[in-house]
Amino acid sequence: MEFSTSLSFFPTLSKPPLLHTSRVSISLHRCSRRNTRPLTEASGFSYQKFVHFALDETKRRTHLVSSPLKDNFISSIPMDGKTQLQILSFEAPKIRLLRSLCVEGNDTMKVLDFAAFPKPEFDLPIFCANFFTTASTNIVVLDLNPLHDVISRRDYKEKYYKSLLPLGLKYAELLPWGGKITSESLRFFSPIVIWTRFSPSEFNYEVLYSAFKDYFKAWLDLMDLAGEEASDDQILLNCEAQHRYLAWRAEKDPGHRVLNKLIGEANAKDLVRNFLFNGIDELGSKTFLDYFPEYRCEDGTVNEKRSIIGKSFDHRPWDAAGEFVGNNFR
Image 1 (cartoon, helix red, strand yellow):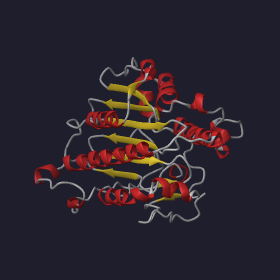
Image 2 (tube, one colour; image 1 turned 60 degrees about the horizontal axis):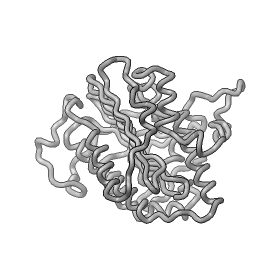
Image 3 (cartoon, rainbow, N blue to C red; image 1 turned 60 degrees about the vertical axis):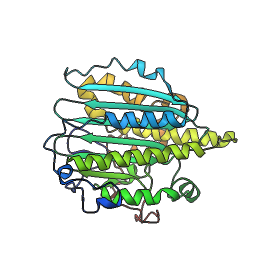
Image 4 (cartoon, rainbow, N blue to C red; image 1 turned 180 degrees about the vertical axis):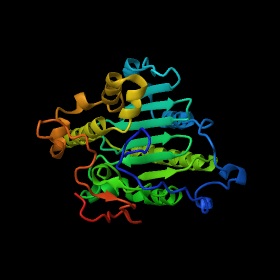
C-alpha cells in the first residue's frame, strides 16, 4: 500500500474517505459527543494498548514465551534522537513468531506493525495489523492473511473465513474501503480484510481498537481449534506458502522508507528481513523472483514497482457472502 506520506503499501490512493459514525450503535457502546470530536493531533494516542491487549489475551490462551530474536534488534536507535522504537517478540506451541514493532515520534507519527505467524505444522492464517498515523490521517490494514489462495481454494476460505464474514461486514461498514488496491497486494488478503483511511478522532481510534481486539480474538479462536498436520507434504506446502508471503513482504514492505530514515538503510533492511519477516532463511530457499518472475528486469534485478499487473480495485472486491467479485483478477 502506498501512503501519501513516507510509508507505502498500495498504489496511489484517491482522497481518503472520512469514517462515518452514524451507525455506531451496531458495533460499539454509545459514545458521547465529546468522544466524536476531531483530534487536531495524534500525540495523545498510542498503539501500546493494542500490543498490551494482544499479549495479555494470548497469554490467557497459550503458553507464550519471550523469543530471543528481538535481542538482535532491540538496540536499534533512531538517528533523529527523538523517535522511540519498541521491539517485542514471542513464540508459543502453535505460533512460530508473534512480534511487534511500535514507532512513536514527537511529530505525531505513529506506526504499529504487529503480526502472528503460525508454525508450518498448522495451516492457520497470518494475523496482520499495519497501522500508520499522523496528525491528519490514519491508514490501516487489518486482516487474517490467508496462507493459501482464498479465490481458488474454496475449501480453505470456508474453513477459516465463512464463520468470520459477519465480523468482517460489521467493520466494513464502520471502516469503509480506503481506495485503490493492486491485484498483487490483494492476493495476500482475505474477504474480511479491513483496508481503510480515516481522520483522527477519539471515536475513530476506539473503533479501530475494537476491530483490532475482535480480529485478534478471532485469530486466537482459530488457533485454539487448529490441529497439527499429519502429512509431511501438507507441512511443506504450508512452509512454502508462508515463505512466499514473507518474500513478498520483505521485498515490498511498507516500512522500508520510514525505517531507512530512522535507523539507516542497512539496519532497516536487516530489521525488515530478519525480524519483521523472519523465516525467509529458515522456511525455504526460493528467492523473490522465483515466486514472482514477472518482476525480473532485463539485468536480473527486481523491478521496484509494486504493480506489474496494473489492475486496481477502488471498492471492496468481495460481496457480503465472501465471494470475489473483481473482474479479470490474475
